[in-house]
Length: 224
Image 1 (cartoon, one colour):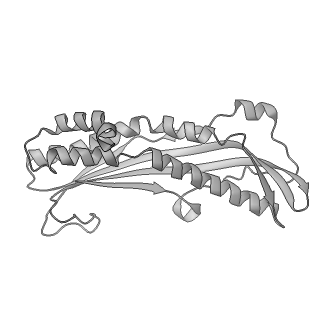
Image 2 (spheres, helix red, strand yellow):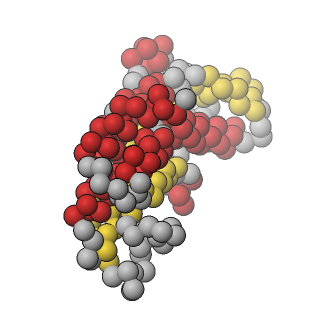
Image 3 (tube, one colour):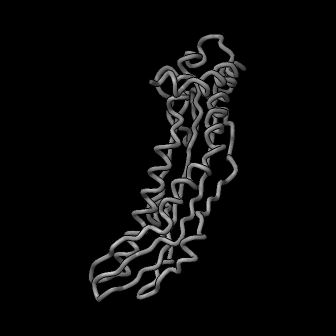
């Protein structure tokens, strides 16, 4: 069984960093910077751990098992987008904000939870969920880069009594949009569901490797 999460980090408390690159007032971003700037994508290595547990006394940090499940793979895709820009103030209450940079940090944290007496078949099944998650994470940086690149050079009209604060809000909102779009595109659920359907959640004898290969190749087709 897969427990799939996508963590969008928002604000300081939840993790989206608001860059201080918005400079007020009256500073233009140069044409050269707009033409040469590219997104910075930091893809962290996968963090993987396997945890054995006593079903009669599961640890406090273990996610609850759904009814009928004996093990689970907890895959947490994390994304943290930071957007920077410069604004040109046209008057006391209006400015144009130009996006000059985007930095996105990506993580995948996978924890496989299996009972201490789990069969090798169950262990291999949960590892199949891990393999699918890591397969999609391989190209996650390309997905994030494509999404972020569309924001560089974008101009946004800003108005208000505090133009610096309004520009900061706009940068934060664009960071949230980038992470939201990334999470929509990096959707492993159809593949994971097909994998569980093929294996009947490890209850049949289909080999995990064969099921993983089939699910990755055919999820898009069978979902239509």
